[in-house]
Amino acid sequence: MSAAALLPLAAVLVANIGVPPPPPPTQPARPVNIIWDDDCGSDLDCIYSLEAIHRQASLGRIKLLALVLDSPNPYGAPVMQT
Image 1 (cartoon, one colour):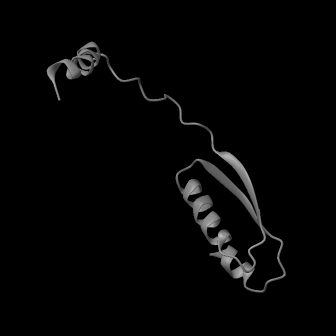
Image 2: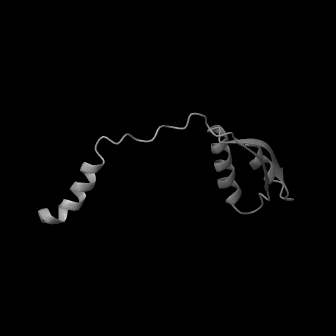
């Protein structure tokens, strides 16, 4: 790579020297209230979605108010309970 090809990159780097990063937010966003309704039947998508929901709740991004199961599958409730 030639020096002429690196000149625009060098100009951008030099122009950004001394520019401070933006400050972090002063207040965290309020958690979003969630009521999760899932069919939790014979497929695996509910396992992944429940993991994501609980992860967001543990990070304080959401407040999980309730889990709703609308499937006649007898194994659905134990999965939703864990």
